Every structure is written in structure tokens, then in C-alpha cells.
Length: 314
Image (cartoon, rainbow, N blue to C red; front, side, top):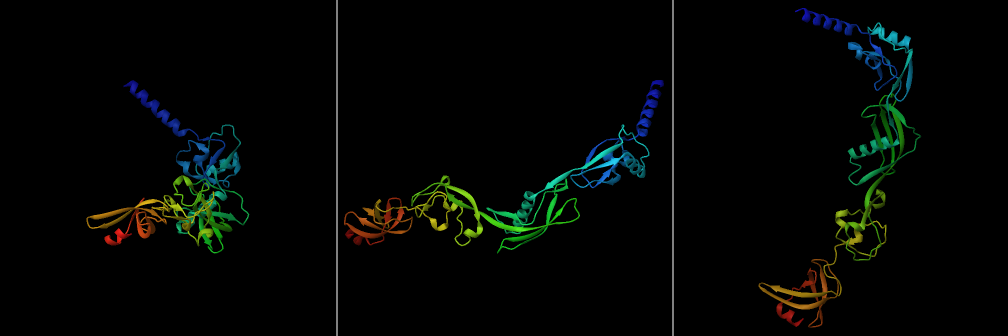
């Protein structure tokens, strides 16, 4: 019983000592909010930790606060005494996020995407015409936002207003926006008729205004297609530059087919012209030495629709 009473008394003394312990001034601190609280400056501020003491400096700057000002601010929220640790002043710094041209151009791009002006495969090349230096904003998740953006597609001119966290005044900027789009380019010189694969093509950004009249083929629409003309390295491909590859090429040896019900007649021939699958062409019947019209049905195979007796005389 005596031991238990002694333990209880010691516990009470420790609790009282803890409750009576004066807060300790931390020294130089860095804050993120606009208000410096007791919890920012003192260890053991207790229930007063969330109470504001004074305004923080602007983001990215440091202010000096002397001991007299700290005592006066602390007394207003009920902290009558505290341990100074030998300090007579402290430095209060406010953390900042740098808002620069890279961040703002990203916000403009995101705004254009949300409005449907920029679609997949497109980007915006933004140039500011007004002088702009990097700004220290509050250290928050979204240090800047677009409050308004006016864009004129005909000229590319824009004006934008940004809200900067921690600053009362908005930031107004203007300039020009060049819309860019990914377009396929050849990586080497290739002859006409070359069937393209992905290794022949590299995607590069070009101004949208360069291709608005001709259009841009998608990569998946080019792979497996054939060049319509001899092409040079670095050339941007347009829809007219590719076509379906020839199923039968000029001078190819072919088998000429005629089908009617269960009957199939064949004869050897040679292509006089080329054709894609399902397209018409001229072929030479090597037996009769006559040129006839046919349709390409597969590599090395064509089909005619003449009557059987007429076919025999071809």
C-alpha cells in the first residue's frame, strides 16, 4: 500500500511538472502559411499551438522577429512566459514554390486541352510577349491557376490572367500560341513502291497551319502502305504520298482464273499493268498472246469474267 501511494504521488508530481513546463522557443523556423502560429515558434505550446501570432513574410523571403515582439504576441494568446534558449531574435522564413514560364505554359496547355482546342497528338508552342520573371508563390499543391484565357486561332494571339497563391494581385500576360501536331516523317531515302513499316517513320511536331489543307495520316494508316513516289529522308508524309501496296506488279507472272460454279479454268499470263487487291489490270495471255482485262485477287493471281468459250479463244 505504501509503495502504491508513493508511485501515485510521483506520477502526480510528474504530471504537474509537465503541465507547468514553460514552452521553449524553437529558434529559426520556416513556415508555409500566411500566419505564424504558436506551434510554429514554440515547443510545448499546448492548446495554444494553433493560435496565430503574427503575419508571415512573403513567400520565398525571410523576416527577423526580436524577442520583445515575440513576448508581446505570445502574451496576447495566454503564453505569459517561455524559455528563450539564449535567443534574442529569430529568423522566420516562408517556403515558396517557383512560378516560372514553364509552369504557366503548362497551365495554358491544360486549359486549351480542357476546351477541346488541343487534341491527342497536339501541343502548344507558347511565347510570352510581355516581360516576366519567376515569382515566389505559396508552397501549396496548386501555386498558380488560369482565371481567364482568350485565344484567337486566326492570329495565334492570346491574353491570360493567372491567380498566384499568396499574392493579392493577378498576373496578366500576353503573347502568341503556335499549335503543333505530330506528323510522320521518313527516316531515309526510299524508292517509289516501298512498303513502309514502323522503322521507316519518325513522328515530329510541325505547325498545324502547315498541314490543315493536306491533312496528316495516322501512323497506323501508313504502316503497310506503299510510297507513291521516290521520297527523301526527313520528308513529311501526306495522305497522297502513300497508297495500298500492289498485289500484282507490272511484269509479274500470274495465273489467270475463270470460275463458274464448280468449274475453274486457268491459264498462264503476265501482268501488263499493276493493281492493288480487287483493282482492275491488264494481263497478257501467254497462250493466245492477247491482252485481256482482269482483276487482282491475290499475289500472282488474277480473275476474268469472260464466258468459258470466250476464255478459250483468249
